[in-house]
Amino acid sequence: MKIDNPFLVTAYVSPQFFCDREAETATIAGALRNGRHVMLYSPRRYGKTGLIRHVFGTLAKQRGTTTVFADIYAADDAHQFNVILVNAVHEALNPSPKLFLKNAMAWFSALRPVVQFDELSGQPSIALERAKHRKEEATTREIFRILRQQKRTIFLALDEFQQIAAFPDVRMDAVLRTELQRSPNVRCIFSGSQRHILQDLFNNATKPFFGSADQVELHRIDRTMYAAFACTLMKRHKRSLAKDDALFCYDWCNGHTYYVQVLLNRLFGDARPLVRATIVDVMRSLVREQDAIMATLRSALTKGQWDLFAAISREGEVDTPTGSAFIRKHGLTSSAALVHALQALLDRELVYIIAHRADSGKPVYAPYNPFHGAWFKYR
Image (tube, rainbow, N blue to C red; front, top):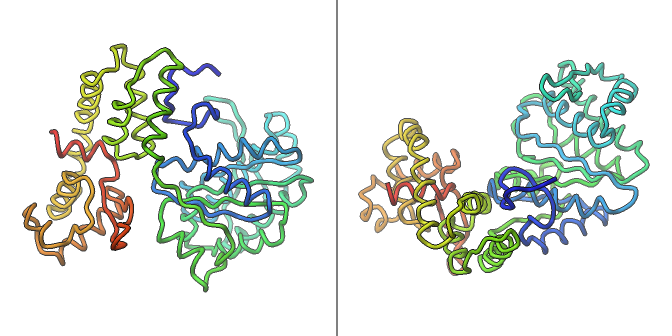
């Protein structure tokens, strides 16, 4: 596939467009090869999905293996989870439409599947009849029965795994733990972006998944490594970006993988020489594009939440957003009200914990989207 812009923002393509993560790749691949499951955590848009695809590309080189990727972010209950999972399994095991149609009924006849066709692409997919919760449990078990029957190792990724904690009808963690114990050929990556839910699922001794997976946390890619990657990729495509300017881009985006890629993607697509003036002009354009989004956010937030959001954004990183000095500096309300406002911003993923101070262990808060943070500074 021909790539017009090497700074990808929508999907993983190949190792040549993938920056670093060598240690994480080796850790995850090594665990899966040796029969261990992995819980992978990072804030959204740090590159979890790309890393999983990258790891799967490494594992797929082994004979007798198959990789299955299921993004369950859209699943609100066990039924939707099963529909997503059965289609991911079928797509991986039967990659051609002919095989898909041939095996859909044969493999999943007990589930009474209905084969549908996408109106635009013509690709087939499976719909399942909604059932009572006990039958939904049986459906999940049936899917894993198919996986157990495969004479190969199955590497299964369940992306945004924290969704299962909110299912109202089925204790999906208990069902999955049982099925995985019965399926030694299936090794899982449980990835997600909500730390407290994932930690409860895997570190709470009362939960089925307690102690059942290696735990890997993605941090920001090293700024020097990212700058070198950006300069090399630009040079490979006959564009020139100075190292200091690449570092400037990284810092402006706070090292947040997706947003660094967006900025570099815009720069690559700009025909002008990539000097500092061009970079600043593109940055300003990105900030202006936030106007409509920020207007919507302002109407959706309380005054206290908006004021705290603005204050954290203007600071960039804050370790005491409820402290008296921070309150006085930005004219905020009482610290008691700020605690609730801060939690609201965390729940909306407008602010997130970017790190912890090495000396005190205090969480450091930053605007989730660095373009929003820049909007408060420059608009």
